[in-house]
Image (cartoon, rainbow, N blue to C red; front, side):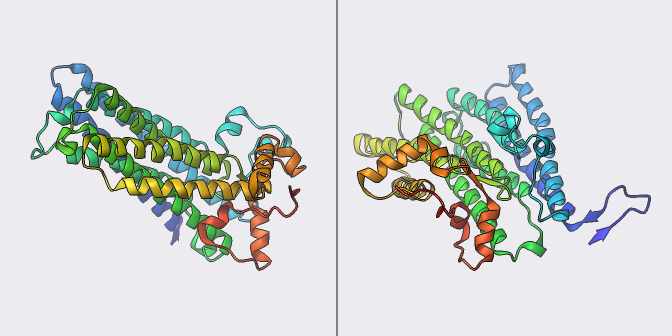
Length: 378
């Protein structure tokens, strides 16, 4: 479907525009409902303080960053549809290929979702801290409308916000969806969204330890603060995933070798190891009921360690044994010597070239596998 205005409509109405508009509308409804529900919890606890009504103002202002990020993703996808064979390169980079602005070097070429997520999460974390530090979940009944269960569902909407935000940046055209590199890139981003959703649900289950009706525990104040701090930090971690996608231009640009293992190691320690230790302590030390997410924490510890070691072997040509470990660490600290003139990243076109020559692909994992035959071996 493509309809022009003929002097009436100033833009061409296409299915891509309709799809992006629907995504944006759903994103605004989900994020707005989440923000308003958290405001209602604060207002229901303390109606006399007029300052609590100011929480509604930033919820309204968040509409503009979300719309800007989704509109930016639509424009980039539209430009890539017109020039599918031309990689996205900023205008200033064509004149000075060796120079990039500081913000672009830090946040990548698709930084708008990263900024939006940081602002959105900061606002949500502030509300969560007010709610749990005020002991609001322990003062409301489980039979009321504003129950602890509704609070958990409200915080869990963060996974939907992340998925919609990523989908708005990486909606591919159906004409190119049959290409193997597009399939691998799409599968990788879908897997990243699903993994982030699972981590968010784990964080919400971990945060419910502070609700006495859920955990049936009265925890020490220091442990309560630790649980709240870890949960809030983990709500910020999807920003690292967005940073990872931004540096690769959502699979169309250059792949960074440093951010993926760093992202996995952060999740390893701040989510899985920390959550596992506290849950085992509550189970063994206080005989408390433990969430089944404990099994997920244990499994992810081994899975992440194996993935990071495999990435180090592939990215820096590490071999087995202590000597291979020393070589891997040395090449992590001195990446240019290991790559020559390639630096720390390689264009995704190299992966596409290997696909066109007949090599097999393996879904989302293929997106992060780089052919390093030209690299020096240990």
